[in-house]
Image (cartoon, rainbow, N blue to C red; front, side, top):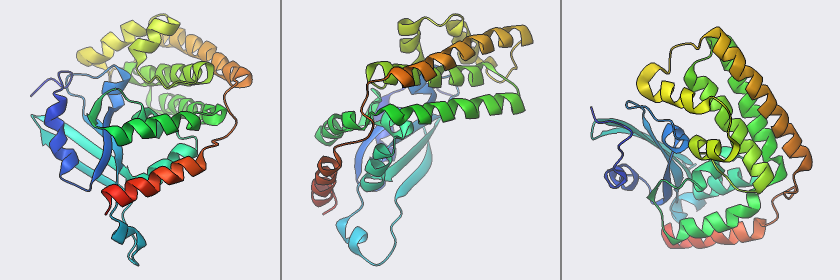
Length: 255
């Protein structure tokens, strides 16, 4: 089996072009977060464009496309939303889609992606806090229920640091090694090593876990403080520009 950490992005394009007309596709998940293991699935996310006739016709259209395929021995998942749904999610303070939009691991892109990224800057608003706060709360519940592993604790660090970073800087950064360089959380690099070396499902030693929970609590407080102090806009203010983009994309790629 091929090592998932040695991705050939060009080999992934077939899964994108076999379905509806793509707008863009980027790599998300563990590869984006910077702690993929040798057997990690490849998660491709993005947007596609439904044909105009499908949108205006009487039959309801599938706004989400999902397909899995084995490529070079790797399990690859492609999940995409029609551009109208994707833009709507951007406007609803959805951190998932913004992380997909700004992922540097581009499988399929171009001028449309560049323009949407520019428009997406004004979708980075203060109330993204609730996305990252909720994501962290869910991670804590899962750890309490199923036990804490290197993987689950890394997800908790990743979501807190991404939330802090966006509230303090106004930019999306989902890669944990990059965030470690910026914020220097103690002991996280060692957790990444545990995870990528294949011991991600083993529960952490209780003493080590408690140490990390204490550090996570401090980061949680920083996230709350960043929300209170953030000078990001309160709401998305470029709805008309996003609507214009949608119309032009639909007329061009959905004709």
